[in-house]
Length: 353
Ligand code: NAP
Image (spheres, rainbow, N blue to C red):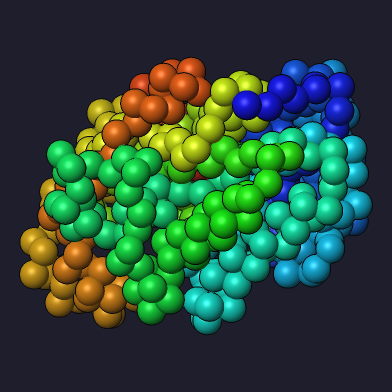
């Protein structure tokens, strides 16, 4: 149990990110001083959305340069902070070497940030952005879980560098954090395990894989149908509140699944069609699994991933987060419609001609 003094600065790693943007906004709206850790504080274009928020919020933002793989890079920005939000970690499919591009920044980066925490006496709490991917590797894993659902008690034991490297990166990074918090009493660790994050972003230059995945629902890639992938999802704005509460509720503890609903891509397509009509080529049916399996390598997917996921129910139990972090989720219809509207407004999807 930790009581955080709101007059002290709060660190956010990966402050340029999609998820972090809404968290920084919440902290600034609450009047806090945010130490925003970014790779390049001189890239003013990349920080423009944060500058704009700070200009009209009661809080203050200060930028510090830090790369996850530079030892000691987080020391300076951490001085005087009681609370550290560690969100930085690559979430992208644009990788050539999964160990170098995903696992190293996630694992070594978490170790690096927490080594700074160990050296910084003011820190009382770390809130780590992990993922439901550290609980469920493939949807088929749920079949072995009680009631077919992932809970905070389960760990992903099926992902490796070769198979589901992103999920593996999140699993080993979170495990490292639990190892590092053990054996001392000064700071505690609260972990947020979100499912797929959707909803409008604050930055003009989005890198998160959330955007790539969601755009495919309306850009024609899924017009002939969509594989029967089931997923969980959460609105990025609700996730920011979950992080904030994890930081400031003294009793917050342990892992916390943050996921509004268990759903699937076809259901998202249906919601979008109900709202935007036939103007965009939303998917209207499932593709047969054998067909998806057959063409998978041609479109950049591994057959094992198709085998272990398509047709299996991916489900999590979100009751702990609702109860202990006081999260109430907005309807997924709102998230999905507002996210797609932003993509239309930015010209990221175009109507059929
Ligand atoms: P994002 O927009 O791509 O944000 C990733 C952040 O990490 C960026 O600020 C990025 O900085 C930073 N970063 C990456 N490599 C770094 C490095 N070597 N050194 C310093 N900073 C580095 O993705 P996101 O969706 O917001 O993801 C944020 C967190 O949420 C991640 O931990 C992710 O695993 C987790 N998460 C996301 C989802 C989802 O569906 N989006 C679901 C569950 C968990 P640059 O801007 O400089 O690249």
